[in-house]
Image 1 (cartoon, rainbow, N blue to C red):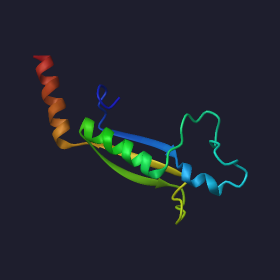
Image 2: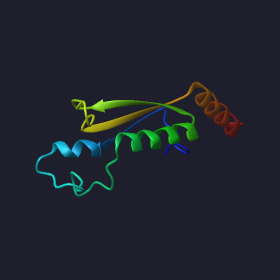
Image 3: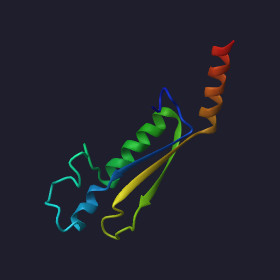
Image 4: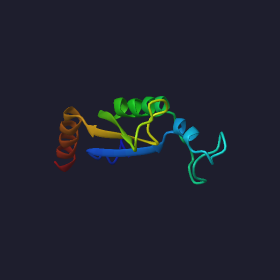
Length: 100
């Protein structure tokens, strides 16, 4: 998506696995929902998002979703990716070249 569709803004959310200790009925080591392929720590999610942003010329900011627990963070985490101005200009130039 980042390399071919190149939307100007992308929102990505994932559960914060660190928050799972606050769910009293969730057994340790289990995902919140059976359809979750993964649940990342805050650091894992931020590292992944920063790599994607750098590789595809996006800026990324991180936004908590839900109340932030002082020890384990928010229940859900969100990365908001924005194309950089340099990237937007390069996309316009590439489209102009293809149209010519």
